[in-house]
Amino acid sequence: MKIITNTSGRNTAYIKSVFTKVHTYMRTLEKRKAPNWRNLRVKIEGREENYHSGRAYIGGRGGEWDVFLTLPRPVKHGTAWHSENKKGQPMFYGTHSLASLVYHELMHTYGYKHSQYNDISEKELNKLFPEVIDLPPAIDKVKAAALPKWQVKYDSALKRRKVWKAKAKRAANALKKVEKQIAYYERTYEID
Image 1 (spheres, one colour):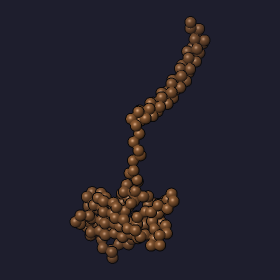
Image 2 (cartoon, rainbow, N blue to C red; image 1 turned 180 degrees about the vertical axis):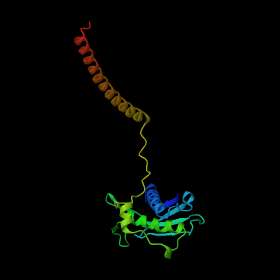
Image 3 (cartoon, helix red, strand yellow; image 1 turned 135 degrees about the horizontal axis):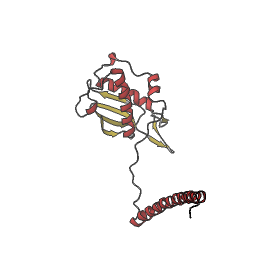
Image 4 (cartoon, rainbow, N blue to C red; image 1 turned 45 degrees about the horizontal axis):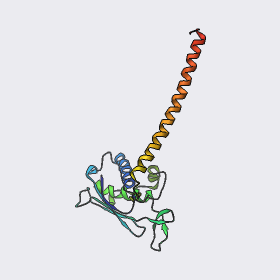
């Protein structure tokens, strides 16, 4: 399974982990993998309103994509990210919502039509995802301003000094223990 594009503003790795977890669960129910799981191409787009939808080809092979999802875009409110409704109010779009959408679309890739299966239950979702969280936004790929080369080397030297001081302290403690053992043997067995 590969997410070929993700313009939803959501974390691609997290979405992929939800796909994988749901597929693993479906494999136990179906006693087989999704027919084209290895080559499944997923396209994800974002939308402004708090609404999701999906499309998938029966049997899983399509043109440019096999599964197409639209997810609500996250919007930053203070320090938190949420989806927004049409009035601009923050809304929750959680793991259970995405997992039920993924389950529904994967059932189509298994070859089922709507009348041939039931959607995943809340009980099954709670078992798969006990912690209901809002989907995380995509990680900002804004790089910090590059430090001067001397600063990077200086920071590295400070870290190495800290490591070597810790090693020196452990060595001093080990040496004390060995000296005690030697003193014990010299006293006990009258060694000169």
